[in-house]
Length: 121
Image (cartoon, rainbow, N blue to C red; front, side, top):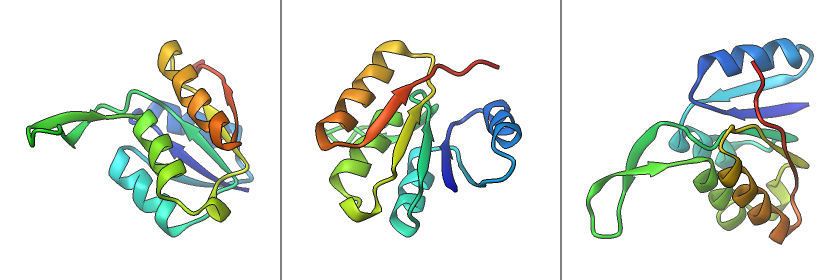
């Protein structure tokens, strides 16, 4: 199975390596890398964090420093990535409960199966 892991914390990547030893894991740490991976490869599953520590975005007025989050990755997935390349499943592993359910609701509106499973180290 091809799994995309989107998280800014190496500790979580290391845990997923142990949990999924027989799968092909693709590791990205920010929005831009996630978007590039989604543009170039089809994944069976995405493991998605919300708080990516990525402030490389730009506000509507042109001011730099907008935070790009896992919600932005999910939004990119449903708006830009071809439906034929959507994953079978998205696991939302953020500890940010409000954000997790926002991501899940977004994915539900287009029929992408997802679950909220907060990360446990």
